[in-house]
Length: 186
Image (cartoon, rainbow, N blue to C red):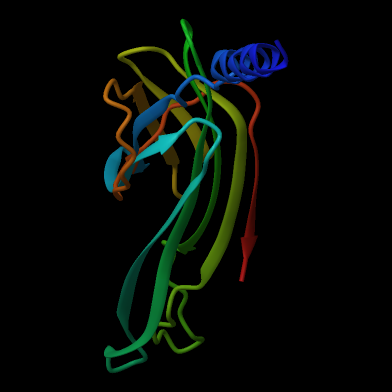
C-alpha cells in the first residue's frame, strides 16, 4: 500500500512539474536602418529572444585634408553603438527598447584666421527609446537628431516561427511614443 502511495505521489509530482513548464520564448528578427539627411548610411539586423538584448558597434574612420596646404590629417573614428531589446510581442506588433550612442562629425568645416581648414569637430549623441512599437509588416521611425544633421532610425521586426536565435548587424528604425536623447559636443 505504501509503495502505491509513493508511486502515485511521484507520478503526480511529475505531471505537476510537466504542466508548469514555460512556453518557448518568442524570437524576433529585426532590422534597424540609420538615415542621415534622407539617405540610409548604416544598418543593423539581428534575431533576438524577447527579453534579451543585442548590442552592436559599427566604426567608420574618416580623414580630412586640413591646413593651408590641404594635407591629410585629423582622423576621426565615427562610431555608432546600438542596443536593441524586443520587450514584447502582441497583436499591435513588437515593442522594442533601443539605446544608441553615436559620434557624429560637424558638417561645418572651421577655418583659421588666415583661411586654413581645421578638422571637423566630433560630437557625441546619446538617445534612448523605452518602448518603440513596430506594427506587424511595417516600419516605425524614430528621430534621433532634428537637424544638422537630421538623423532618423527606422525599425522593422517580426516573430521568427522556427525559434532560431542568431545575430547579424545592419539597421533602421521608425518610432513612436516617448524618447529621450542628448547631443554633446566633444
